[in-house]
Image 1 (tube, rainbow, N blue to C red):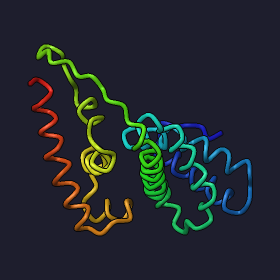
Image 2: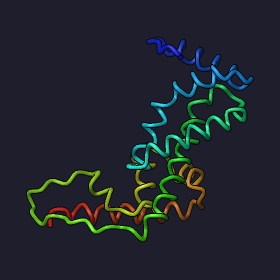
Image 3: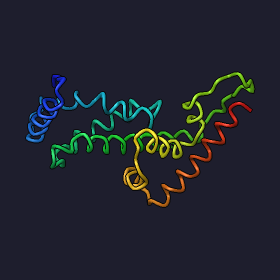
Image 4: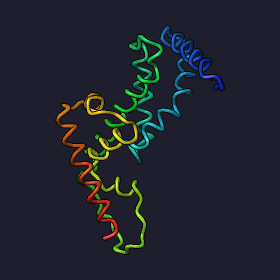
Length: 178
């Protein structure tokens, strides 16, 4: 397994070495590389896929495993992992949302104004497609073009979703204490 060093250059060098070995068919290097990126992948999946983040992380790791040979520039490894992981988290979230649309349960929200509601509670009330764009913008700092690429949507659609998502978030935030 990759030893984490306090020297960033050493970690990059180790990852580059593992990457080259994994791309040449070394299964041990592939295992070590996947073990190294797993915490990063899990952190990326959590805000997008939420309760299904473990499934999203597994799908992302499979996609990384399958696609590692297509990565030509070792210095782009973490950016590539981020893009693959975000795409898989969005796909998992969409797949789960499609299955769950008929099974949505109503949640009881207290009318007590003293009950505190944090941002994640408000986000949970939003549709998945609104939560996705808000997460990609606020948490990952992506612009509309990056989001469009990840979500496989036209930029105009991303802009309109982002506008509506912000408005819905604000409405849900203000309703929390009403």
